[in-house]
Length: 82
Image 1 (spheres, rainbow, N blue to C red):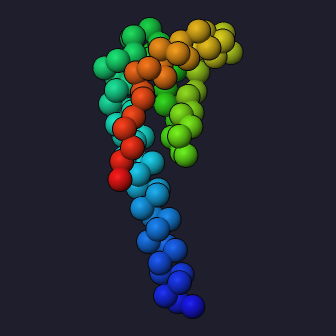
Image 2 (cartoon, helix red, strand yellow):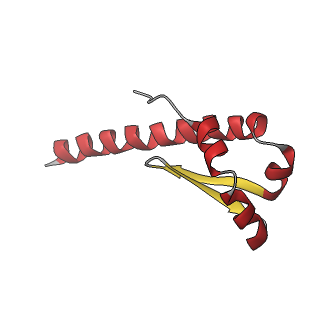
């Protein structure tokens, strides 16, 4: 039973590491690809299972980000990390 638990832990840690690596890459891209005005009013909070979570400074900026969804998707398309 311990061997199965160890194998599961290793597998789950690899998955978490992939998401964390992609999260770091996205944070770097955020600083270079996204306009300063948007960066000042929104930031990346999390990336898990292909879902990017952003936090806006205000509800009006949350609405503003909706207009940039396609641009953000285009700038953040990732190749899968193996």
